[in-house]
Image 1 (cartoon, rainbow, N blue to C red):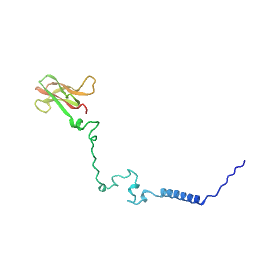
Image 2 (image 1 turned 45 degrees about the horizontal axis):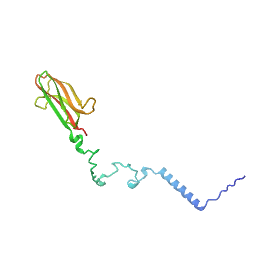
Image 3 (image 1 turned 120 degrees about the vertical axis):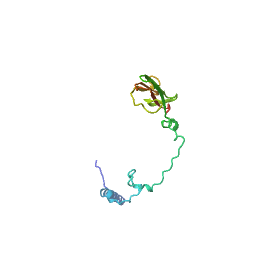
Image 4 (image 1 turned 30 degrees about the vertical axis):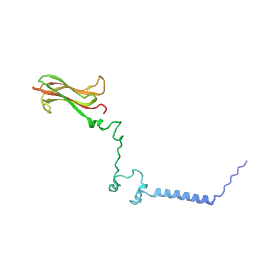
Amino acid sequence: MRSTFSIRRPSAAMVVALVALFAALGGTGYAAATLSGRSIQRHTIPANRVVDNALGGGQINESKLGPVPTAQQSATAQQLQGRDATRFLANSARVEINQLNVVNNATATVTASCLQGEKGIGGGAAWMIVNSDNPTGFDAQLNASFPLPAAGGAAEITGWRAVGINRTGSTRGLRAYVICVPRTA
C-alpha cells in the first residue's frame, strides 16, 4: 500500500501568524543581546518593574517615605505563652543575700535561699568587711561557692551556699547571694 501524503500550502492567516512569531522572537532576542544596565537611562524604570528587594538604602530617598503606621496591641500581643510582662526575668529578678560574721581563724558556712515559688538563676559568695558592702582585702579563703539544688539531681536552683575560713586577723562577713526569679519565668 502506498501512503499518500500531500503537503498543502499554508493559508494567508498562518503565514501572517508565523511572520509575527518570528518577529517577536527576534525582537526579544535582539533586546536581550543588546540591552544592558548601562544603556538604560537613570530614573526611567517605574517601581512596579523593579525586582523585589533589588534596591538598597542608597537608591531609596527615605525623606519621601511616609510614616510607619502604629501597630495596634491586642490582649494576646501583650502576653507570651499566656504570661504577662511581670512574669519574666527583667521585671521580677531579685537578689537574696545572707551574711554571717566569722571571727579570725574560724570556718563558716552560709546559705542564701530563694522564696517558695522562685528559682535561682545564679549566685556567688565573697568575704566582706563587717557592716559594709566592701570586700575584704585580707587573707580570707573561700573553700566553696555552689548552687543548691531543690532535690538530688533536680535541675532548678533553690539557693546558694558558701564555705570559707577567715584568716584576716579580725572578724569578717562571709556573704552568699542568689539571684531569684519566679519559677514560671
